[in-house]
Length: 544
Image (cartoon, rainbow, N blue to C red; front, side, top):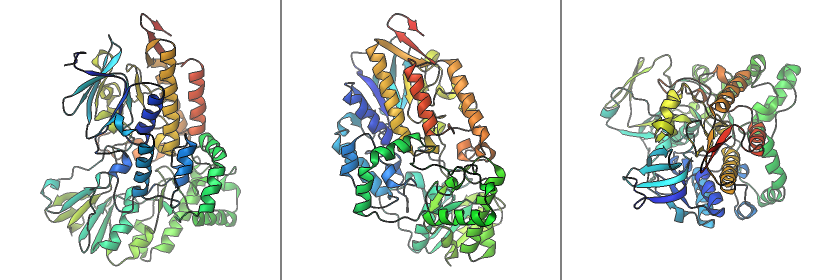
């Protein structure tokens, strides 16, 4: 099956042609390596290829949500607004792809089904869904943290006579909800974006909510050319701030506790942040909102008061008020989300108190009643972080699968979120236990790709065959990730950060919560010490 006379050989194979896969391809190709990217979709884009649901936007400001490695790319592209819509982001990805001539090394409509490490040849044997095989010295996953869509397995779903959609796998053609009875399940980020848009078109919209969410206004607006020019002139400094920050944006929390201010001063601080809008604006008003429960309650109560003031029906407003710690789920920003529940054609159903019992042929039944529907939209998120990796049969030394090594997530251990012991020459871009989903993904992607590229260059320059994380290094890193997360309120809430949205998935915090600036310093220090915590293999012996 893997006869070298018949199988193509590459220096590196990359899974995925989103932001991370494209930049990884560019870096390695520029360094002279032979590279093949496999992408399941028909074109580039990754998450922005699939997530085409109504209202889909980035929640990071456009001017920070782009590649920063090239001044030409920065200066030759102009964003239209503060928060770009999905079509514009996909246009940007295609612009970069064409500008760098990346498509010639990408094979589309091809899904990698397995990647097995050969300990004798020190390379990866990779198979695709169509039965084709290739080998590569390095196997690099660029499949994204949020690419394994989660559709709950409700009883009767196969008998539903209407249309079923998932926000993460949306059709390419426009979905017409005009006059239809639509049900949306889920009120996370994608739900909060889709619900106001669907409500404007549907005959009637029923929102099925399990957990109410904190959300702040996006305050989206168009950019003027003078502002764009100022950004371009100062981008070097902006990038420095992004790379040194907590979340990959050029902003930092105020250096004081929420409990130091009087209620009147605090109210003014929160009001100003609310009017400014933005993903981290509320969280950055004080230094301890993510750390101290009492401080956190001040911002939580402020947002609940805003919901009460926006939503006219007191009972509906009460249902929409969250009680978990603010910021322990990814913060949400919206355009008229709470206002949507003032519409006559919108109803809110609490499925925590009255759970869904089954999908019927004509709609949906909960413990509290039956709802006739023409279409169901699942805004139920993803099997985050580990889910996309487990969809590929990845096997390391001694044939051990990644899923078994991590015990399905119960024994998750990585080194830097980039590598894991027992799997030489496997690199995970924004993998579990890296900052990834807690950050501006582009900043984290560029840092990972640069680090991986430099590591591969180090191996070539020193005539080394393979590099592998050691078990003590990954044990220490994984413990450090848990300790840092436990210092905050992040682990005190059931969230997809914890894997709590997937039935049967072991709970555990899946990211590095110390911030992208600290993480970058740690990674750079490890590389400077000749990749401390890794073992490397020459053609004849292992070198520690």
